[in-house]
Length: 402
Ligand SMILES: [Zn+2]
Image: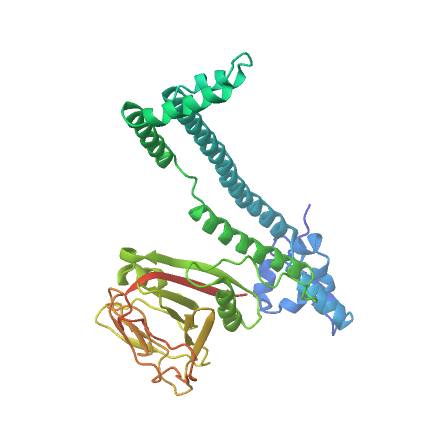
């Protein structure tokens, strides 16, 4: 039978009174009555102490280093480990299913290509009466073998003008059409799903390593899986990430990727709404590459509202890529809004880089909010020859600091 107090309730906690060298056994109601609900440091939960002896040891008079370690370790519970393990087992199984499906599709795809090639070659052999050529080659009795082969080739050359030519052209067209209609296994969606899952996975396992070893910052992979930019070169993309993350750990999340007609202010604002730490990369029709980063939060305001958002730490910057050069234009420390929210327009970086709702029109007024210290020969932030953004490709990446 459970021990009970005068309330006739189950004893749930021990109340430690180090000064009087005493303990009291209490039910939840006793704790309420005695006004002890906030005395967490002195209340030992019996339920917990059975699983984690640290629950008691972290609250009694021990060496402080030991106490601090044990109280941190309290957060690592076996139930939590078990649940997280189960959750990740499911999530990894999903990735496995995605890969199994890709394996099947790959097999079907290559089998189909092989079949089409076989059909095509079979058709070709029939049209040109290739078996006669093979007979000529094999027949050792044949005198003037070479002459016969030359004749076969000459016949073929003169023959491939009329009906034979039409037959070959038809065969080629049918073949091309079949290859074109063979479904190519696509990896785009899978890649982005798996990358996100793997980044989450990395974050989780890092977190648990830390949780179970709370004193030590373990040597964890500095950069989780790199996603790359379709617009920027890998080297410049990494340069941008380095500048933004300052060597700290992070994960990145592609939240918007659009081309041509897919780019518009509605899809833009829906994607960025309530998100911070966004890196925006644009490519214009005439191949100018530029963009900006701000830690500030983007918000889809109801029109016609407009709001300037300040970057208190002056982290925001604009950039442009010119060949392999990357030029940064950091925000000036003059307390001007880093971004201006207006959901009837496109993105607006402090009025300096201002893109219209259609992502085709816009203006650059560099030097107002962002610095414009261009040395001769360095790349300029320009839209390109037409002096209009004419944005053809757009990527928005969220950088989550860990
Ligand atoms: Zn009681």
